[in-house]
Image (cartoon, rainbow, N blue to C red; front, side, top):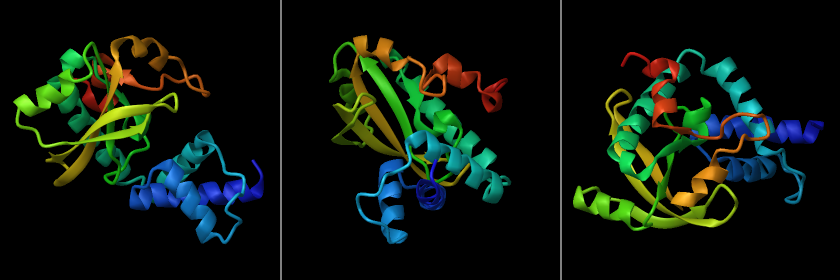
Length: 197
């Protein structure tokens, strides 16, 4: 990776960790902050994730593991509540780069796209419906809610992305690094901090 992309990745990584920005906005803001041309070549998400891991190792090694464990515990609560919709955890909480400022992203694979929304309504859960970019770049319905983490003592954003049941096959293809891009309930329960809990 060239030095400009490396500088963008390092600056964006700080924003991801310290401000909870998503990768896209962090890269764009890093370009602006560094005074670079708006059309500068950006580092890919894998390079940015590597920079986030480096930043966490240097500056957050004493707090991040506990914060990640708390976020995964909260994700597990929601995955268990929504087990009938085949939940999969993705994003920074799954990949291990999340901090207390990170949101939780859970993909639901439903036979009926409205069924998850009805389940939230029936259980009195306040949420906001919106459209986000899905894992193949397509628009996807999302139900966003706020849920308190007792361990962190604050509200965390939880985003439920609604997919068709058949989309689960494509969702499990390994990413560019050969990793599973998301994990189901069993996979999340088997993460080190959840074993025996």
